Amino acid sequence: MTDIHRQLSGPQHDPAGDAGHDGHPPRVGFFTDTSVCIGCKACEVACKEWNAIPEDGMSLTGMSYDNSEGLGASTWRHVAFIEQDAPAAKSPEPEGRTELRWLMSSDVCKHCTHAACLDVCPTGSLFRTEFGTVVVQEDICNGCGYCVPACPYGVIEQRKDDGRVFKCTMCYDRLGAGQEPACAKACPTESIQFGPLDELRERAALRVDELHRAGVEDARLYGHDPEDGVGGDGAFFLLLDEPEVYGLPPDPVVTTRDLPAMWKHAGLAALSLVAGSVLSFAAAAFTSRRSAG
Image (cartoon, rainbow, N blue to C red; front, side, top):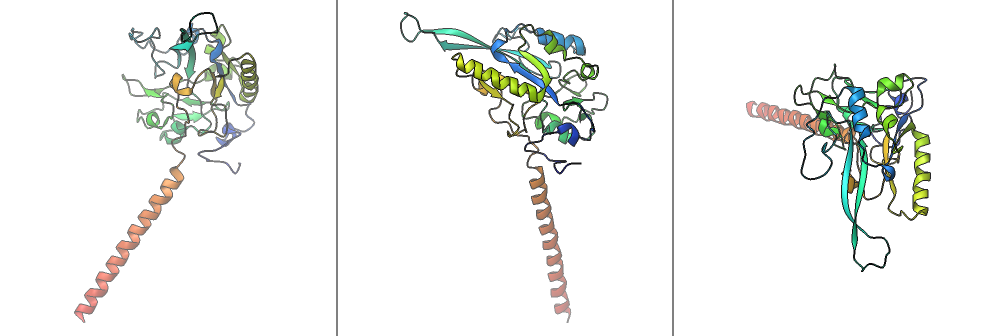
């Protein structure tokens, strides 16, 4: 057992080992390159079909061509359609002309290195797999909902019909059979790439350099850094704009990070209260004896 066992924040090189898995395979994850996403939603369909996820309304929102709106208990992969007015390329047209730009991005559970949802689960329904991913065991979930506000990304959600929580499992059953997740398998442009996380991070860095050389200066990685507030994500992204544009928090922090300090302060406060009560009782008893004497 390592000296980082039970660490709630900071860099963590081996989440699966910290969870008790010996001789486990390399940590795997997703690298989603939004620069080549075409918004086909094949990943959404493949995810639903493989995991037998129920339909989630598919009603027109009136706000976008995207009718699945966001991640939830019945949407484990969600392709966002973001419509922007972008500066037009250089042309003889008058200055100030703008053109439409679509940003497409397939979002998913981040399978955080430090997963607050897992930390707060009282039943053990959420667990860390040998692949370093985070999975919900639906037959153990009691629907308490503690994990819902614990997630810094707002990914995990309860189903209204039974109260239990559901989210992406990174196709844990397929991983155990040596297969890649259904969403990555179905992606026609390789926007969703699956593999060992260290290899994906190297590949992503090269892709950003390539885009910068091509003049795409806004290309940047999100969720790849082990030094960030969640210790790095198991599913990270190449974005073409600020994270907020994609509905992602700019600086996510694991919500259980400060629990040790909070419990320490609570313990000191309780100790002070007990000590004060004892002193008050002792003073009252001393005063009573003097009065009686």
